Picture 1 (tube, rainbow, N blue to C red):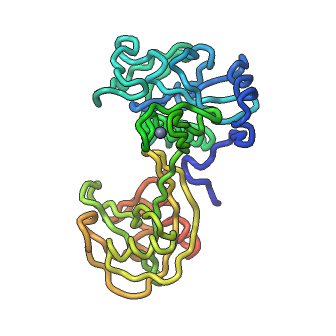
Picture 2 (picture 1 turned 135 degrees about the horizontal axis):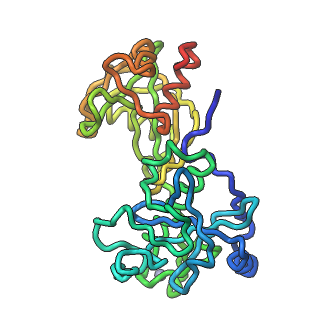
Length: 323
Ligand SMILES: [Zn+2]
């Protein structure tokens, strides 16, 4: 049974065709049903296994620049930065740059957000993702990615002036030189190289013992996805690939990636560690991979929230070895 990748299941209607209508956006912000996802550098606000949505009115003041995420059956949902709602230690005074945390020691338990439900706490999105529904994981990923983009787009990269939100927060405009800054997504190719009943996987030095995963890397400017797959496999493993097939994709807002999953057919070369990113790269047989899925053997695979695992499971399923 095909499941969606973690973070890919957002159910909101994004209303992208209405964002440029300022009057409509103002109406949405003023609705009593308007709610906000709150997030920041330290994480996202959750209560139990759900996003802790707060009434937008409870956090709305002139520091807050809500970003419209979309509409659900109950009304509009926005994203609001924790830094702007006076919820840092000392009531927000610790923020000397609006919208960016000063220092790294953000107290993860701090969640004094006006209007937050009882028990609300800041949580690391990657850590809590397995507990969330597909729709909630997707919603929080959407919010986290946009809030990160806003935190890093507050000044114009061309002339240095402070930027202003437009289009319900989905664009920032430089009032001095008119540069338009749009939310950024960084494409990453991740690929399972196959050769008959074997797959190629590598391991990074920092990973837990026995952990191997699919090879991956950022797409470079001016490069097609197919070329990026071939280049990364050659750089990391010294192997040439032939046919490349797209499988599925996964938003990965840590901070701004989109994982693009491929299968690539081996063409030539034997794997060897070729750069410092990996400490080992080798073939694994379908039997070894299937054993790892059952928790047996020396090989340890990424968890089900990783697209790498979905690629591996999909390959095994098509071979008739469901994990
Ligand atoms: Zn400018």
